[in-house]
Image 1 (cartoon, rainbow, N blue to C red):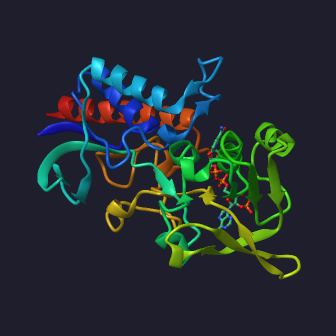
Image 2: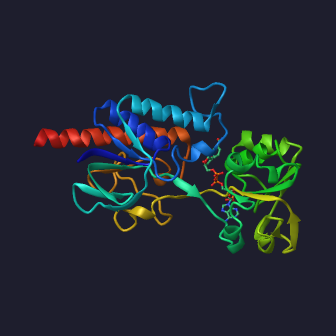
Image 3: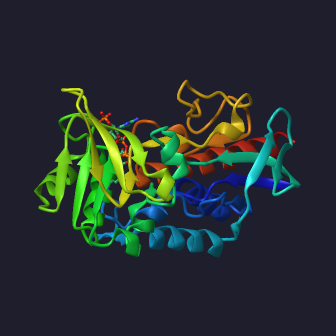
Length: 311
Ligand code: NAP
């Protein structure tokens, strides 16, 4: 029987692991399919306090895991396939095996939002990608025109990163101004290799018959005009959706699928806590996720201590 099982190893999960490990709870942590979470797909993180020159996202998460493991956290590369949170101990099915847990901290994060186009799906990894840091340096994208879709911080970050490899980066955004923070927006628009394409949406990705991306069809929302932009790659950065399908019907979720938090890090189920992007549609920062991971660990520790005191 486990004291604490933590689902997810992004900023929230690993911080919860660090705190519960230091509280001698010997947490078991499941990575899911993306160890280290979304931050591992970021190049330089400039806004995590304590790193005046920034830090590589992968390195930050690798360090946090090491720090949690130093105090006894057990991090397993495994995916939770099913949960039964209807009674305690809770049951998790992990790679086919049942794991029993006194408490659970959900830190399952968020995944990339898709445009929802059929050919986007068919050409994924054949020129359609959701991660410039992972794929941007591939030879197929070198000295080519690349399209980035979106207008937030992620889209700006992707566009700027891709200027290292691309001949030009077209930033296709559905409005005429960026949602990104001022500093990111200013840097992006000042980059001579980045050309914004305002008020425009991608309506199709070409060309499935060639089994690779050769361009995108776009529509100008002001004029209704459609045209094709030739490009070798499409980098989609239009936000995220919470990874909470596993808990649907068992934990209270809001209409967008985010876990609803009660007091502190509590969910509607006693003994189940939540932290990070799966419960946060507002701040969605590495540091807020880490803070929520800390809060979930402290709530979890107090919950177990209160139970032990009653026993
Ligand atoms: P975001 O801020 O939610 O921005 C998503 C962008 O995609 C918006 O511009 C949105 O358009 C557009 N969009 C959404 N759905 C679309 C659709 N179906 N078709 C076309 N466009 C669509 O997401 P994000 O950029 O991933 O950022 C998420 C959070 O992480 C934010 O809090 C951000 O500050 C943070 N972040 C920070 C950094 C950094 O500080 N270095 C880097 C990355 C992310 P509208 O503008 O019209 O809504």
